[in-house]
Amino acid sequence: MPIRRLSPETVNRIAAGEVVERPASAIKELVENALDAGGRNIEIQADGGGLSRILIADDGKGIPRAELPLAIERHATSKLEPDDAGDVDLLRIHTLGFRGEALPSIGSVARLSITTRSRDETEAWTIQVEGGETRPLAPAPFPGPHGARVEVRDLFYATPARLKFMKSERSEAMAISEEIKRQAMAHEAVAFTLSLDGKVTLRLPAEHPGDEGRLKRLSALLGRDFEANALLIDQERDGVRLSGYAGLPTYSRGNAAHQYLFVNGRPVKDRLLQGALRGAYADFLARDRHPAAVLFLDIDPLYVDVNVHPAKAEVRFRDPALVRGLIVGALRHALHAAGHRASTTVAADTLSSFQAHTGLSTGPAYSPSAPSAQGFSGWTGWSQPAAAAQVLPGLNERSARVEPSWDGPSWPSQPAQHSDLATGHSPLATPLDPLDYPLGAARGQLHANYIVAQTRDGLVIVDQHAAHERLVYERMKAQMAEGSVTRQALLTPEVVDLDPAEAERVASRAEELAEMGLIVEAFGAGAVLVRETPAMLGDTDVQGLIRDIADDLSEHGQALSLKERLAAICGTMACHGSVRSGRVLSAPEMNALLRQMEATPHSGQCNHGRPTYVELKLHDLEKLFGRR
Image (cartoon, helix red, strand yellow):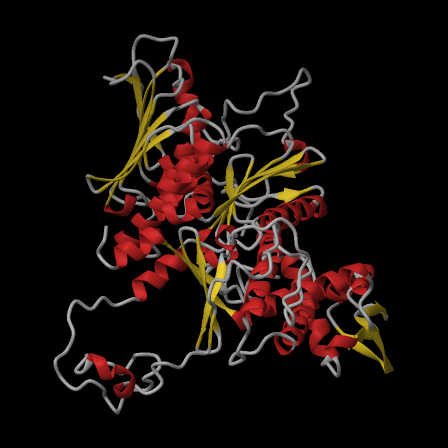
């Protein structure tokens, strides 16, 4: 078969298959055009999941009449300017779009209509493209002083085979909504309105540029819970700035759907960024939990390549180690600064689990089939109030009880950072009312596992085992950071066969792995030799460990497997070395534990990301009993 030059229509349809994958892809391209044109009010309408009709209207600078026919030609754009020699620098891209493919690609597979009025012109003009065929320019009415209205009808009518790959209208509408949310997150100073099948589903007013306006926009999109549990991120290193918000570990999710990453205002899905985010939370979340975060990376365009994917959904960094280090460092700094703070959703979930009872039964006072009279779970009513202690066995029993004694020893004026849990001894200073501490004063212990503490405006319930496990874990981590990890030499060095590329990646990280107690070296083209392993791992599966590390390096650019195995060992050791459930604690021991939690970062969650304490404010308790 001879080589033939494809027709422009065929070329455009091939390009459309790359750029316009589904209606949400077309809307993404058109919204980015509106943003590049300086639009400050963008309206999006979609009918039939975007397959029947799409309308994007903006108040940007518009397209001059003379340039309108050129706008629908392939690789024609106003966003790249050649230098004096006629060369275009594709490494200094400051706009969202630049390839000049969106409008001709859409016009080749749909019925495209562009109506626009330029700032410098008094009349509006329209141009239409149907299946790649262009109609002449014509005057048209326009509602605003300037801007553009792009309407797309019957998407993919010219390529009916593509329609068979579309999902349901509901799924396509959800994808459109998600895309608009991403664009709105990155541009808080722009107002967005989204209508689906004639119904307004999203209306976002313009916010003030900056952290405050951005958080208001994120709150409108992700909910007030995100606003209440988000940590401000703002760090800069070597000219690269990371900003945005990241959720507390206890505000985690079951999937990564609540992770939004942007590079120079462009929504991206980058494995490097996702791996860095995961690595920053690796010490606080189990593998099946994912943090919620909205992160914005601002970097000189010269150091990031956005021209690696037709849809511009992927980027490539010149210095990926710098970017990853910035993300991990900034997130860990914010998590450290959060101290023992836990998410507000913990208290909300706790309150929702309570069941209110407005009356008491007149039946039997005690149900023998109930599991425990001490926990009141089997209690159905008072038949003889005077004989309550006899009716309820164990009513007068308790695990531990703390009575306030203001004539006793003085309480420490600052949270004790070196309190001994076994004795409760801590440096004494100016007396301070224990109710003023963040976690308050211990008032009792329930079921030999839960410490009940009173604060100035509420109460706190602490899981003593989970809390102390975290304290021990943090202490062990600090000890590991002070010196190298103890290693054990293998009696016979073990050779692990890998793919040549995988073996090279593992060998190139030998220095980093050595810091974690794993000594490896290259052994030919497709293998590595393991001489020593971390002593904490004991008799471990060396082959499986190296292969897991190779997979992590391939997918995330970091050796998470070894770090997680060391963390798991530390967690196991901390579990065995912590206060066990069922141990009755004295008043000094309980208060010492509370003070240590206040002084220890990350003590608000256990080693698996679950909360170590629940705080209920007084107004929450009043709502529970109908006082509010």
